[in-house]
Image (tube, rainbow, N blue to C red; front, top):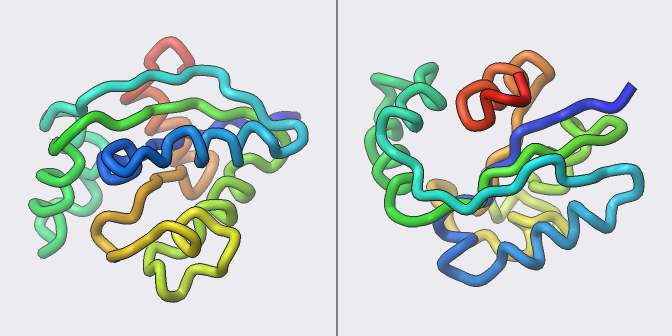
Length: 137
């Protein structure tokens, strides 16, 4: 049964003109498709809900500020093993540790501004989709 996952192309991806490249990599993957795509500047309330588990950590405030700094592309992607697959396509958060061929390995520069978010589990995907696309819940 196909899965759905939330993917966010972060403000640095939009600023650097990488959204078409990254979306293309997702679309070229067999059996994956875009169920929803929207360009939007994320407000603090949405970001606080999305990153609630990180509140109080040293990186929380800079992360929320960065994510609100410009438009992001928010997507629901569906397909076979899409949660695991998009995370592999994204690569590890640290761009130096990310393999060539992954989004972060090819385009990443620093850990905090790491181009892409992808849900890490079915539970996270369900929770995150409700925040950004309530009609998919």
